[in-house]
Length: 337
Image 1 (cartoon, rainbow, N blue to C red):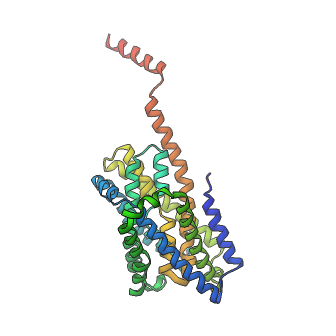
Image 2: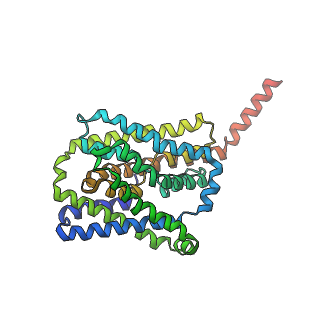
Image 3: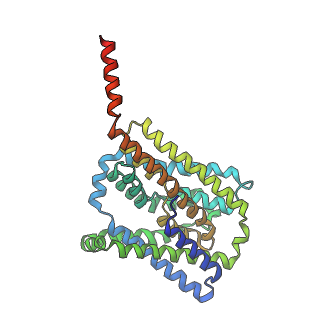
């Protein structure tokens, strides 16, 4: 089973926050740095997203609408259904984090990687992931404000304004400046990947430091964590089955169904963590825990599925063995005679 090295870094950051949480003035510095890092992160998102490619991808609108419906409609409905598990299996704070997880946009990189591995429609996965991230900048905060309300960390007009200023404005600035800096950004993917991941690690450290200072970890027991993992496994299984067989019911081809399955069943850690830090504030630590667990779970399960889809595609290309074909032909000839 693949273990994402980045998850190990995230866990290490959580451990660092547990041992050496930022307090007082150090917490203020970490919070300010985290805010600046998130703004830079979304500025780079805007600079990297090709507007022309996004517009070209609209030609496959049925697929993109299907992925968006899975991400921002079906997922939230499953999250709302999980409300019945409180307080028997989930605590209320864990449920808030689980519900927030269902509101986050889809991934881009892993959706593309798994679609390519499974021999699916890679351009469709690129556009679907990009559209989901773009829509999520607006849809996720609005859905969170509507579904979580005042119980989810103090959602208000001020929190939505923070989302606009910290996420949407930098993203639009990146889009406007793409004409001049797009090439520079594209040529330095490795360096910018470090900026991306470093920004997320800083957000995680700030969020979990605040959680340690407030003592919120006393609210989570191993049994509750086990229950959370089980619930997330069920949600992931439902979405994987729904995206695959739903795509078949909607008469999509095999390559498109693969793109729908991998883009429609995932949630983005990179997009979700910065949003949680803005929307949940001091309660962000428990809010992002379900997302971190789901992220690793989806990578493990989708890696296995992608390899299976690749073997199925290879078998279709190879076809039946020559001997079997010959026997079939002879048998057919005998029946015809």
